[in-house]
Length: 290
Length: 224
Image (cartoon, rainbow over the protein chains, first blue to last red):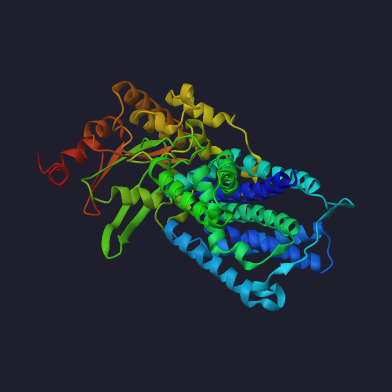
């Protein structure tokens, strides 16, 4: 039972990451490979704030505020870049963040990482048990995903679709497209940071490897397999791929080779999606008429 | 709308050279010319799709349709039209989820596509998509409307309907600019016409007179 609860918490956190990235890449067409960076900013900001004696609530506010400001700045810098160049630019930020985490050892403890991050206390109640943490995670991420869902259903979401499909045509109607791009980048990054605050306080240990470029690509894989732009598809994609190693264990794959097999299966799934299901496994097919 | 000495270059290639155009409210102005004559460049400059410092104030008063229909494939017909008439403000856009804007509904009703408001734009025929673009332009409520080959691909019934709409808009003192290859249509609906060739305006005036100009016939139809 405890194992299932643990799995559910991790699954919820990665679903939050996948859904937020899905909105950014799938709805707005902003191809970022730096999502784990904001996941990491949230985790490290929370850890540093809590070690500094601040409450979990204050730490979350700090983490999200820092993420909103820094991600908005990063987004402004990347604005002039076209889609493919944008991916390369965000790749640069991902590498830069990992380097800062490793080189700034006096603050971040470098590759050793930070451990002993305390569990959150919410309204005077310490979330010591995993079941209480699961409920808290479900409520927090459920709220965040609801906000994202609302945004995609609003006129803002309509503008994002138009930016993705034909940005120059939207210019005719005098929208300040750059403002929309920066805001959605900051909002989705803030959701990733929120996932980071939960991750750091749940596993109680963080190091740069959890927020590397590889992790960003993994989150992108969850979205691509699940369904670009589909919130439900991305969450289901995350669930499927996160549960895959566990399924391998049940079919008798030795644990020492499970990681390799997992990567092989991820690779096959990605090739299959690229060739035959570009909309992902759990999203409706794209309407492709001209 | 008075545009004086309009010029534009793509790199070293001059697409438009000292073109001056005057379009009056309550009139339909035609712009004709062979391919590559600078018609699209002129419309792009006037509708915020190409940078221009001198005419930025004009750009805010214009809207357009496109020669190759440009609707957003992820949106429904109503969504596409709503983008033209809902608030441009970022924070108001987040709050607003309404799809009942009467301007959008009226525009769709006007072009006869109200029954398809919830259909994805990619599911429409070419002619229907042209009509959605027209509805989008009408819903933007701008005083200057550019229509780039609006009639291409429309059925004769739809053409009649669109001509009726343009005449209504003209009566409500809108400034209408039509880029068209159909010279008969230009003659029928336009009050004045400008002929572009090689980025220059080679003739302008009343359609009947301009179309008889040998220089125009030579440039536009090879003298045939």
